[in-house]
Image (cartoon, rainbow, N blue to C red):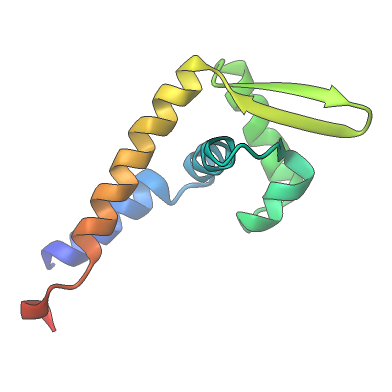
Length: 107
C-alpha cells in the first residue's frame, strides 16, 4: 500500500464519516457568517434528513452544538467545544489535502 493510498484511507476514517462532515459543514458555514439550518445542509452532505437530525441530536447531547428552533426552522451553531473540534478536524482535513495531492514525481 502506497503512502498516498494509506493517507486517503485514514482520511476517510477520520473525516469521511457523516458526524465529522456535519461538524465541518457547520463550522464552514459559521466561518462564512451564514446561518446553518438542518433542513438545508443535509442535501449538501448527501445524507438523509433523518440521519442529519440524529447526528445533530447526538452532537447536542455531547454539548458540541446548540440548536434553536424558530417556528419550523431549526438553526444550529457550534459551542465552544464544538469550535475546538472543528478547528482540529479542519487542520486534519488541510493536512490530508496536502498529502493526497500528487507530486510531480508520482505522476
